[in-house]
Figure 1 (cartoon, rainbow, N blue to C red):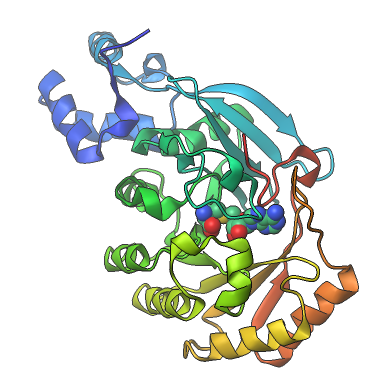
Figure 2 (figure 1 turned 120 degrees about the vertical axis):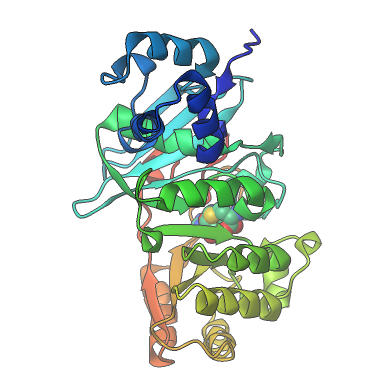
Amino acid sequence: MKTKKRYILDLEPGELAGEIRKLDPARFRIKQILSWVYAKKAPSFDVFSDVPAGMRRALGDGFLLRTLTIAEKTVSSADGTARYDFRTMDGQTIPAVLLPAKDRTSACISTQIGCPAGCSLCRSGKTAFKRNLTRGEILEQLLAMENDSGRKIGGVLFMGMGEPLFNLKNLESVLRTLTDPELFGIGRRHITVSTVGIVPKIMELSKARTGVKLAVSLHAPDDRVRRVFVPEKIGYGVEQVMKAAADFARENDSVLTVEYALVAGENDSMQNAEKLVKLIRRTDLGPDSVKVNLIPFNPTRGMKWRPPSEEETAKFCDVLKSGKVLAIVRKAKGADIGSACGQLGI
Ligand code: SAH
């Protein structure tokens, strides 16, 4: 059923302020209502307890505060990771993952329905692209997971379904809201945007000086190997991607993450590791400004590849370390419930 109500989370905070002023000219209302929506994460207008009933009703008549419903939730018995599949108003599915941890609970969220990049190793790439998520739909994934779990999310990974930089305008709007101390108030260092390497968009995001961290899904030290995983149509070579990513890290004073999914027999040789060290050296980033996340390939439906053995993985990691490159092997979280890297298809 179509509704004429406006989705409150889709409005930029400044735009929402204008709407609030129309309902009540008192200036303090703006701060109060923005705080209920974003800082206190209220799930309905009814709980805006210090807002007069008449105004709460007017908000309810004019706006929607939530549009997503939880279609499915699965919790990993192995590590407590929770996968949420949200249903949108137009019947699409958005996967998101809550990663509880003692020090800081993080969330991995989606930016598109399906993914136009079409990487061969990733389940999202096999999901037909439908549309971009709106600003509100991106933010609501976080609000809904906090409401449902009762946990405070202190870190955000744009590593769910979709290519964040293909939805750049909404991404930038979301990043401003996440880092605003009056709204979500998440430290910029605890936000990572992951990209398959869309060079001009990396440069554009860099200019916005959000100060968030960038991760590039490289998976290969040269273009020949990269073609196995990332379609040619994406069109940017490893040198170009690394240059743009390194400039981003310098301009935003943040640490660059290089993501490298290890696939046995495809990109896990010691020569590949040595070449990766050289590629990283050529960026001129200091040893504390770049780190490599090695992700042993997570098997996903319909894909024949497998990860290297633990010993092979450790050897690859050691080559990077002896080349003075910070490297870690990332443990798969939520692999038993299809919520690890590369498994977020629908
Ligand atoms: N489109 C963005 C955001 C998705 S992030 C990007 O490409 O960065 C998802 C991460 O998981 C990427 O680094 C991706 O390459 C990695 N990945 C995809 N499939 C994988 C698999 N089967 N095993 C391990 N990692 C995988």
